[in-house]
Amino acid sequence: MALEGLFDIAGAATDAVTHLVERASNRVKIASIDPEVFFDFTQQRPVVSLDSSGTRSLSWPENDAYELTLDGNVSSLVTISGIEPHLRWRTFAEAVGEIAQESGARLVVTLGAMAGQAPHTRALGVVGSASDPVLAQRLGLGRPSYQGPTGLVGALHVHLHEAGLAVISLRVSVPHYVTQAPNAEATRSLLARLELVTGIQTGHDSFNADAAAWRTKVDAAVASDDKMRGYVQQLEALIDNSDDLLPSGDELAAQLQAWLRDNSDE
Image (cartoon, rainbow, N blue to C red):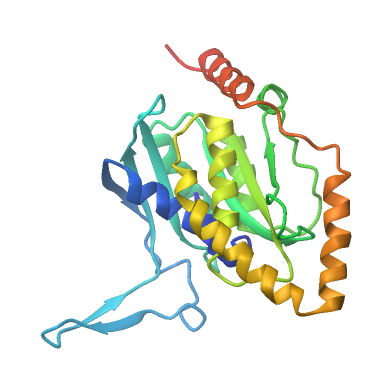
């Protein structure tokens, strides 16, 4: 699941979900959350368009769920992508929980992108956390530690956890000095970590060329500014001296399969 808004810098998270939907061998819309009670339409206005015959149509903010048929060990996946609502977050979280439960989901993964102190010259780091302590330990993920005012994603995670659903959060750190969309490097990083954690074949390597082009473009912009070049070098040193290394993909896949097996109904 990914939603446009505060936790989708450069559209990296929603682009990742769109990529999964587009590469699926088959997709079926299974649910749509009615926008009427969740949006302030003075902030997120509906859009009027004309077709080739001049007929007008109106498009409202959408939050749709699709069931995807995929290749690989994970043959079925449900995605929810759309726009973060302005109102009634608790009711919206309940709607998402209902979709997850009715579809028989065994695990919910939210994708996000946040501005951070990440240099564009390095692979963009993805922070993962899980509410379930056993799942977090098995997959080498952190536990949610933030306390204070939260957004929809925070409310959603609490609701899903209380409803008995396993929840994982994956958040990529986007360089705060280049937050324009699209950001193929950030999307690729999210998809790669999603594949690493869940075993879902995401096809993240299809973003390699666009990610390289993005980095080259930012390189050129930074090279023209001495102060910016020095700042990026400082960020590089911070990252290069970090001891935060990811566990192996095989280890994560085995641990997730064991957790799902141990926590499944007959």
